[in-house]
Image 1: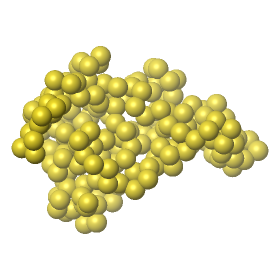
Image 2: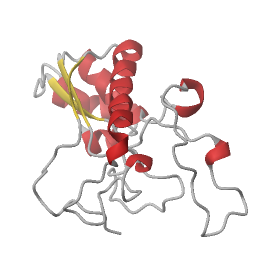
Image 3: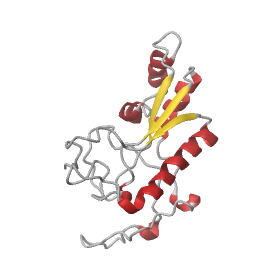
Image 4: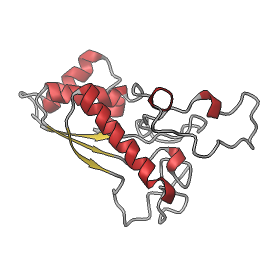
Length: 189
């Protein structure tokens, strides 16, 4: 689903239902597998730079006290380690990725029975570059070494939410391992 679901999940109901029938319906392609991209999402202050659909929302929420003040200049820096995964009311936002969630539910309703979750990037505040589109040096890892556990918590809590709140049984979960031996997945503006 990934970028496709991020875009089309926001289309008018009659169009996206027609598309879901064509892909997952018995009279369509009858797909039974759906892959769900757990988004990382860039900082709210980042000017959009990704192609249409590429900026998949993440489930984190940054409370106002950690955001830049109204009079912040270019020298403002976000506090380190502000995100608390154990603070669901303030640090999580389960409504952010409605477009992809729609597709998960549509696929299940039409008979899909194998759901996989993966991630292309951790949230920006867990990356070395501060961006979800890769490191400045594309040969270097973008996940900060001290954020491995925090990222694992992020991924597993999203899966837990999808299972408990949406009734989607996720069979597999994969961290970002796409194309690990190439140098083209670097941050570009």
